[in-house]
Image (cartoon, rainbow, N blue to C red; front, side, top):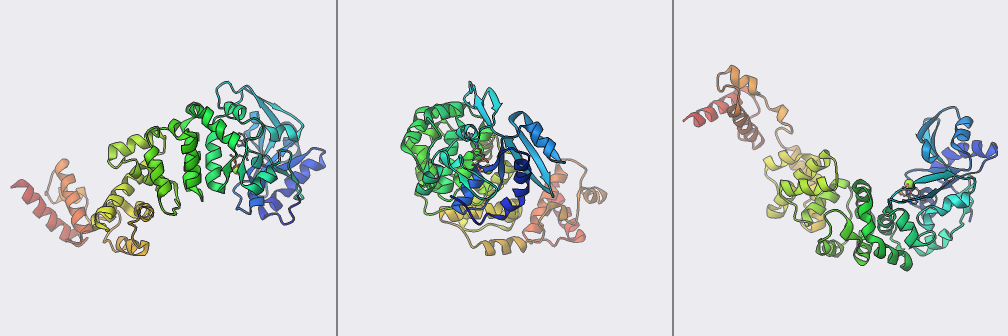
Length: 407
Ligand code: ATP
Ligand code: MG
């Protein structure tokens, strides 16, 4: 197969391949970028594999960065772009079920393609668009099949993450997992516990954000792989529920975790924190999900949010909540939601026209907890539209609040 019209990403990277081949080495585009081009999907990264050893690659270009030199990866900097070039290699060892004990640089493309996970990811392409297909990846691509390169059982023993990659690609590409490959996932599912949570999480997020999540979810159920994902052992019913949702699409990682927390009944702060800490997400994501779940509860209970709920959530978490509410069948018109958020008198507590210093200066309070309580009451009154956000009006209000507190 020769691809005649290559996407712009390849055109830009072509001089890199040309330089390597002019020096007498082989160099190809490999992996996901070849697969996605044939499928007509947008590319996110262009990987190059070469027979040149890292030192040889470095000698051919002025500017390079050792991004993963021990694995053979060198980044070539060219006209403001960076291209990852990896020396053909074989891997061996894999005593821990997740990474090779040893990588060996080789000169043969075939050996390099052989270590790759699925036939559709084991395609190479020359700079002129000729596809090199040594493992029948093109036929599988055409038929929509994920098939391990070689003996599936062995491949999952080498690296158990590949099982998560299988279900993730099933979702992203709307592919089915070939029966022996799927059986090998079922037989080796427990090995997933050997894999770092962060790596499993990335695949789980990609699965859920894929175009056909129900497909990946169904494979998780069929193979039982879900039982070895963090906090998922007792979540069969939740997975069934997800599969049964009418056509849904999760646009962001934030909406993904908000939907999961909601369906897993992690709706109070402690439970949400526990769930997301187990999955080792960032604190930023945890805070976002906490805010989004509060907004989501309000949307479910009342179909709308109070001014103060809008303010507390912030526009980003509100948007997430509404994306998830839409999937769950109680979404609101996003434009209306945004209008009511924009209409708030202030959007950040720092916009309040008085601060603690003003209260002390006016001898309304002494610094301490009472000050916080009064400022919070001021904030709420402004957001609710009871008091104008002006210093004098707020000092009057604070005086009243302080008096009520003192009597
Ligand atoms: P995407 O970038 O869309 O997530 P991809 O297939 O490009 O998908 P990468 O993780 O970028 O995935 O890896 C690039 C290539 O490296 C793959 O196409 C595959 O050939 C190989 N590869 C990646 N991870 C593994 C793995 N765990 N085992 C074997 N080969 C792998
Ligand atoms: Mg990739």
